[in-house]
Amino acid sequence: MTFKELDTRGKIEHIWEYYRLRIFMITFCVIAGISLIYTIFIKPHPQTYCGLAMYDQFISMADIETMTNELNTMFDLNTDEYTVDVQSFYADGTDVMVEAQLNEKFNTYIFASQFNLLFGTEEDTNTFIESTYVAPLSDYLSAEEIAQYDAKGLVLYATDPYSGKVMPMALNIKDSKMLKKYGLYEGRECYISFVPMPEETKENTINVFRKFVE
Image 1 (cartoon, rainbow, N blue to C red):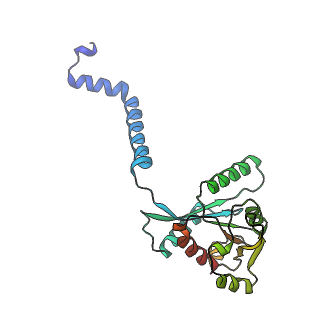
Image 2: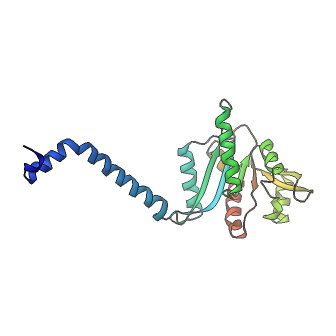
Image 3: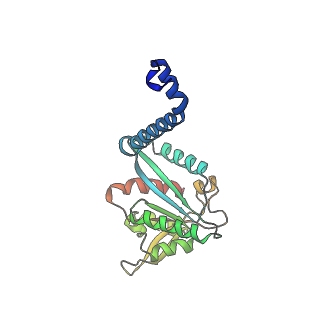
């Protein structure tokens, strides 16, 4: 009996028997495509309240999620609209290609203005300064606040490449409760610095900065 000679039920059974795998694959691809289109083009994405880059420090995905949720809660953010963005840039030095890719990603994010605060060791922070990635603390903090930190010996002074003057460029946050809570930069002194940013993001960034200074 040919396909044309089958009744409707027989045709359906024939198609299912011989083409069900193809049907499953086509259905899966259609659903996956619709989901991807929705995620990229339709689903609303929250704006970054403040972008944080932890340089040369491994942070597990679980800790990044926990820290992000904690910071979002601290600042009472509606996560459908805004979220803190925490990213870790770490390579153990055994794979040159991985390290190069991480540095390329870091530099790309810097130039795309995805970060507001950089965290790193003194050596790394001096590299950020020399690379013109960061701005003086005085661009965002009052002279009185900087003086309070300076009296505790926490301010890192360096030559600002833009002005050519020695300026307060970063802050030592070795006693930060947040860093200790997540075991970050253990046995090393961590510095936090500001990335040049537009006026509308300053308040958010300063809020997060002060939270890590505590």
